[in-house]
Image (cartoon, rainbow, N blue to C red; front, side, top):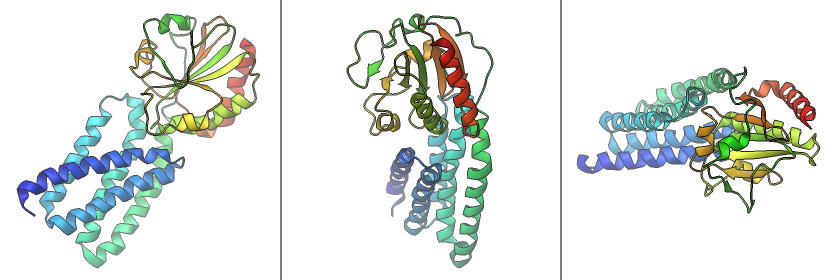
Length: 287
């Protein structure tokens, strides 16, 4: 293939693989999500060797893929990087593995799979869970004691369905769960929130999901699994920015007078029972 055609083609396919890997979040299982990322990149690595036959094409693809990963990591906070970096490492590892699996022949067909298994096991079993749990943070927040209405002024929350008027009318205790679709700790926290919803009185308590994203998502984890709870889309991120939210998941508990009483950041799935019990105690104290 002529070089003047190969460069733009490699870049286009890199973008396609990166975007396709991004939608692996639709799988509830962390294992399957990471496996899809890896396999897409692995196949691209094999194609690079079969069709381009030289290291230049591979190095170009690898460098541009690293550029894409770094470029899309830039807007996120430090805590978000904790789980995005391990996830994207499967794309890089897949690309390397596919190329060298095809390049070094029989030896590669033995060594590369063993290295892949070792990498995946260490990443998913040790590195990834520890980085995710380290995103949890506590302590008092400057938000506590302030009215939620103060932060709603000038913002626009797009409703999933036709919710009219004030999204958080007084007279109820609210748990506001801020998240975005591709946030693994947010997805891990969802079963705990469902437990809380099932164990609390719906008369004067409500869980409201606030998606830091647009309403026209191709697929929405929470929309499919939280049909009984309200859901808003902070598409311009105005509400999120006013609250100073930089880490997800982010939880705000508001009392019946509309005053913020509790704030928590991050989530550790190994402490689900502790989180559920403590949260229910907080809610009942405000009801």
